[in-house]
Image (cartoon, rainbow, N blue to C red):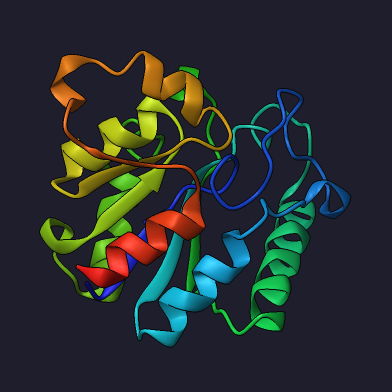
Length: 179
């Protein structure tokens, strides 16, 4: 494994039904930054793939998003981790773009950027759309129970039976790095 792709809200950062709109709303899930540090220290590059329709909805601007992501990177670095890339879809669902999960475009662009095959890349998410994007892209879907993950785990379609499910990103990192 050369790269791991993580969803942001619900996997690395606490999620909110009102959208994460400012740096003040960046609240890493306990253990998530340590998981990023574990990946970094094992030589695995960390990418985040996140839908950010709040941009299209006018809830925040690109400067606020950049400040949020900068803060997340700084906090990961403080515990020995590194986020190598944060890729985001700025579109709303009505745009029907290829970069908005569950479409695979965001993951494919990350793979191209790192020159890796998605066939050997885990994608860790908390929602069905994360898993669908991973599957469509040919990556390995991994579910965590944080964020919306507990609900997602209870209602997984049979097409996703047998995928790896972990309590949180830290336990996922331990398992993924031991493979």
